[in-house]
Length: 239
Image 1 (cartoon, helix red, strand yellow):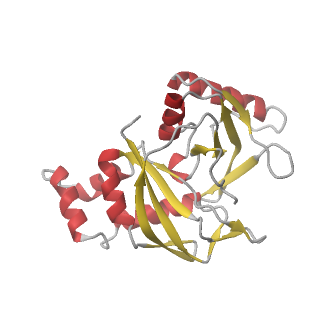
Image 2 (spheres, rainbow, N blue to C red):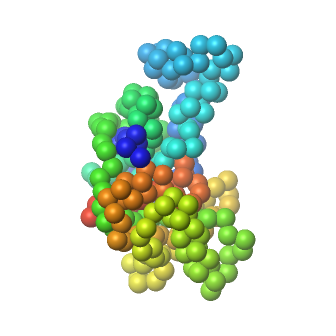
């Protein structure tokens, strides 16, 4: 998946809801649908949709494509279901390389409102995902038929293995541990509904499989921060 690039932005702000994956996606989508887009960016994008009467909605679909991965923003928990923005807080997304420059220009210096908390995105940079034999994801979700505390881990790991088999990825997958040594059970709130999943660690990956997994992720809700894998040597999402 060498056609995938990562776009990063430093984040200015004070606080964010700890569970902000869906709010972040909604704020980005609202920006795309607004009249606040840079004129030069609109001109560049419209060249691809000259013959379309629905060019605005097609631009939104083009940028919020299925291949887009959007990470939640890391921060320091404040004990009140919020995180404090700090110097390592980043907004990160991965997308097809032909869309990266648009995201770079679109989000640069923009202010996003996430449930009454404002953040500004600055200092954009483009990077390539780097291979690592061990990757982690803070939250992976699957549509399990039912969620039972005892059987969910078994069904969840089976879903992970099926996803890897479909992608042709070989690696040792397990459910990560939280700070107390328990299974890292986590949730994502979407429109008032809590979606459950687990933190995941994958070991013994080849360089090619590592890049592929970072490029496409596994599971659902990838626009909401789920299925985002990063090298274990990185500073983890602390929220």
